[in-house]
Image (cartoon, rainbow, N blue to C red; front, top):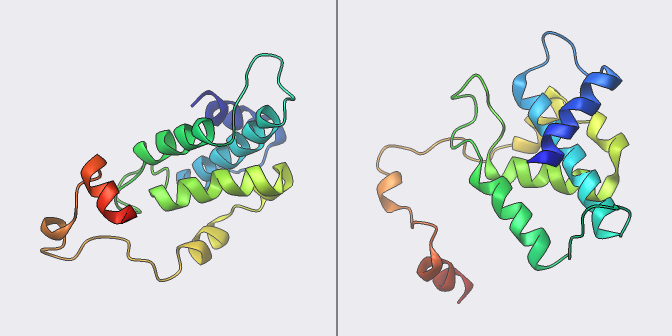
Length: 140
């Protein structure tokens, strides 16, 4: 979370966005900058933090997933779906800070593609909960 909030500071200082930039774009960029920071930490470039690239990185991505939007466009303070948030962190982690500037309304629309954006009537009842037994079932 701290890396994400620091990403907002970078956005402001770099004047990346205007008044009409959608919140979800700002939030995806902040996730991307968090990914840049996580890469630096994982490579040992931080004096204050360490991060292993297995359990540590998995824990970070699990936190990103837990703070997700369930339906794109349903809230004014939209941050992105789990898929979108993890992808934004990955963009920053693998491609660096310059790639974060490339997250725009058009890029996000392309990334969303034809993925379902909401449940159809009755679909919620057929979804497995995300818990240990069901994750084990999926792994099998």
